[in-house]
Length: 290
Image (cartoon, rainbow, N blue to C red):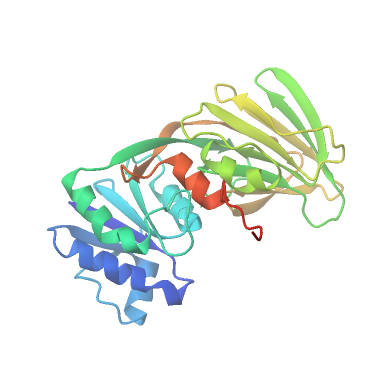
C-alpha cells in the first residue's frame, strides 16, 4: 500500500493530529510519502515521520491520499490528484468539515476500517475551466466552485451568462459563483444558494450582492457548458478556483463545464451527508433559554 500525505502547515497547535495518524499507520505495512512542505513542517515540530519520504509531485501509483487539515486542505489535495483516479481520505484538524470529516478521536478506527476495506467511496463532480488567461501553473479544475469577482474597484461588474446555446442573464453584481453539489455548502451557501446532495447532476449559479433583488440563485443541469463574459470599469476581473485566484481581462471569455472525471472521496460507512448537515448547520438545535 502506497499512501501520500498532504497537510496544513498553518495551524501548529493542531499538529498532534498527525501523531495519532502515524500511530494508526504504524500497525500496517504501508509505504508513506509526505508532501515536501508538510514534511519540513513536521520535522520542524520534532514529529516522528515514521520513515516517510518527502515528495513534490503526486505519483500515479499512489493508492490513497490522506489530507490532514480542514476542507481547504482537502480542496488543495483534490487539485493535486485531479484526473489521477486516486481516492482521498480527509482527517479533520479543526471543526467538523463536509469533506474532511474524520475527527481526531476517529483516526485510529478510520484507518483500521480503511485497511479492512470497510468504507465507501463517493464520486464528486468537478468543474473544468477554459480561459486564455489561466496561469500555466494552475490546474483548470475546481471541486467546490468557480467565482468571478470584481477587482480593484468598488463598482459592480456585469457578467453575461449563457447556458448551452441559450442566453441566461446579465448579472450586475459584485460577482457570480458557479458551484458544484460539493461546493453548494461553501461560498454559494453564504450568498443564499441552495444545498445540493452530493450525487446531484447539477450546478448552482449564484450572484454575489446582485443589484436587483429579484435575481436569485439558479440550479442548472451539468450537461451543458456555461459561458461567461465580464464587463468592468477597470477592464479586469478576478477568477477564483476553490480560492486560487488570478486576474483576467474582460476581453477573455470564460467557459465552464463538468470535468471528464470525478474526485473520489473516502467516507466511513457511518458518516452520511445529511448527518454532517445536521451537525454542521445545527439543524434542530434550540439555544433559547427555557
